Image (cartoon, one colour):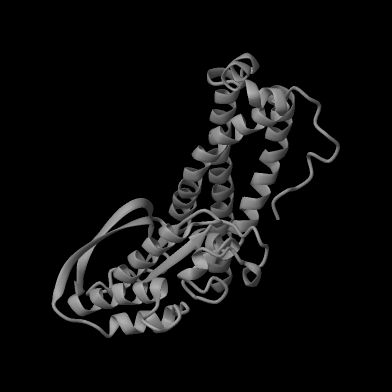
Length: 291
């Protein structure tokens, strides 16, 4: 009986991983195809227009530099929404329910709400005659939860919300780019505090989540702006790269993500070199870039 159950679990996980890989591939491929269509067909870089609009730049800088900038601007914006689409697709497969931009309504004690603002103000400004406080998620959260008071109606919109059929728990994620700014991080922390302080505990876990780590290991992450609000190396509510995707999609999801991105990268890099830049791809262009 145990052997039969174990085999079925393995088959289910294998099917999930295949579905996860397919979802990642479909989302990234769709986005890249739209980018390529835009830079090649609907909004190409026209040298004559560039020379007419920016003659000084054209006189001093090779056209290829601005052609690259033209592509970058049309790539970065749509990719900003790709992380949420990937999370929803992967989380829906693994947990059964995953949505973006979902509102959570509840009530929070008046004193807890005051303490949320107190904690954020201390992190941002410190107190008179003292240095700004260093972030400490567990200590701050306990202080806020101990506040209580008269219940005040409150609503929070989550970037990503998972209602897991696997764990029977609800998780919220503030999903930001790998190098977020200070203001958006402050807003995220306030939202996380409010979600966890709601009466009745509608949210079991709230996380500040970055899709990958440009610094490699968690302990090496050193982008300064979110560090004003979180201990990015130690806070349990911070998820970066592999730990995020494996929580959303199950163990091994990040490896699938890397594998699919690198395979697609070879195809699109070649197209960009040949079709957009009009040059032959250099030696080594097809090596893995994401690790």
